[in-house]
Image: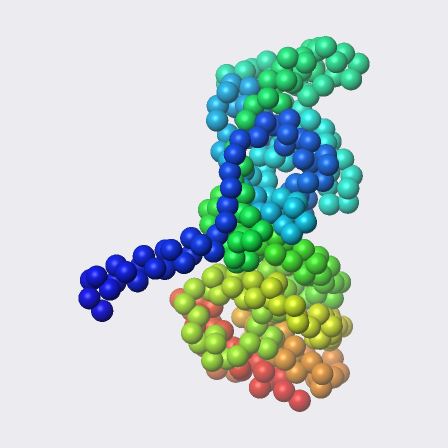
Length: 377
């Protein structure tokens, strides 16, 4: 292909993709943003709240910026078929405003306690201030005056709208590009947000199953890991990898991208078999929970003849996925299963597949087929 053909090809790709994305943009007052939320015309996904970690001071800085007339970055939304806007980027900005004025609700529809502002460098008198003192609506030591409330309500925030007729994948791509490297703590939290955005029912199903008592007992992770959604990440690995084509995992270039793409595929699959996947998951962790519990995915010391340490991915990828693959026929007694797992730790193909310098790209193509064969009935 010569230079002119390469240029023409690039231009045709640009033209095609630009045609697939329909958007609009304009300025809206904060008062209008408040009305949209009160009327249910903008969806900020309350499930997202735990994925973002703005402190009260960061929230106060946003309110300070609005009062000082500092421009606020635009909000990106995706327009649904019913006309409602899904917030793609700007969740924390809008949530802060809604919490400050006292209208923000959690995922159960309950009001979240209003924000009380903190001291800032430029406006130290913001300390202890709230939106409105109901007993003194004209302003008090605690509440904003009507003038101050109007100043905020009349401030403008631009909105960029991804219209409903755009390519369905555009919303996902926009969300990922805008949020990667932002206030989300890790890749799984980004995947969780994508799940809520693409398929809220699937996300709620995953969240419910990841709270399974046997599953939680088997992975036995600490509070910090739970806060960072590691249990959901582990569940998603089971979901994606249980029946994965071994030839496919041999071609993984980037593990995070691979899992994100697979979760996206599941979220967009109208034929996804919830019933079978739930049966496989529950049977796998019923067996492990009853027989191994917190020792399921710990390292085994063959010399001291005991399990020790915390949760490890390698045994999970071998044991849970191996049992999960064979779940319909797998029905051992606890002594047999325990002996089988201990035997695994003497298997050189297993122990040589992971360790220092061997990441998931190296590990998975070896451990997944090994587990399927090792726990075959």
